[in-house]
Image 1 (cartoon, helix red, strand yellow):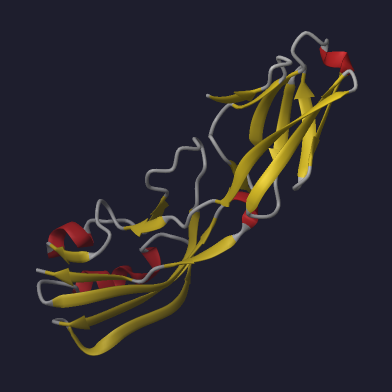
Image 2 (image 1 turned 90 degrees about the vertical axis):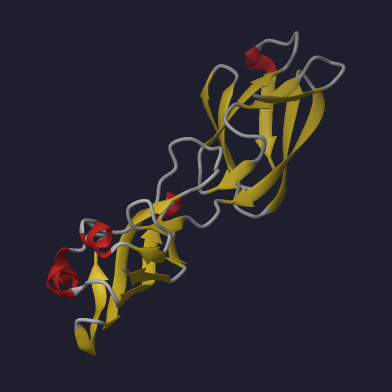
Length: 196
């Protein structure tokens, strides 16, 4: 937990992270010190703030930068500043790989693409891959195998092309789309696999 406070005993605590993230429910524990909860008014200058229980609030900031939470405890205001960030882009992965050289049999055993948030401290945040374009060239493909605009994250729609892959094939996964918190769609980096 990250807690900031004043000499009056008022404090605001971000229970999950040290910053607030746009698109997430940032839970805050708020206290007016010796003042009862019924005499505490809390406001946020960047986004919305809703009370979910005694001394518990959810902040939803809207703009990167900073957010000021003001706690008014029985007429005595105290302000607390938090950094506001966007959730980072996830990393596309196939199995345990982000691309590069991979045994052909290992690649062919994979079922699809997933989006992983690496080293992100806010628990329970996920992205879902919603589409991609598949390219295969090299061995087994005298003409490039191209399948644009595939919906979803599985390889079901390209299994016929994957069956033709082998050592010497290059597979490129492009235009990877993933939906995350708040329904925002991100375009993820292209992945290239050299099968051996």
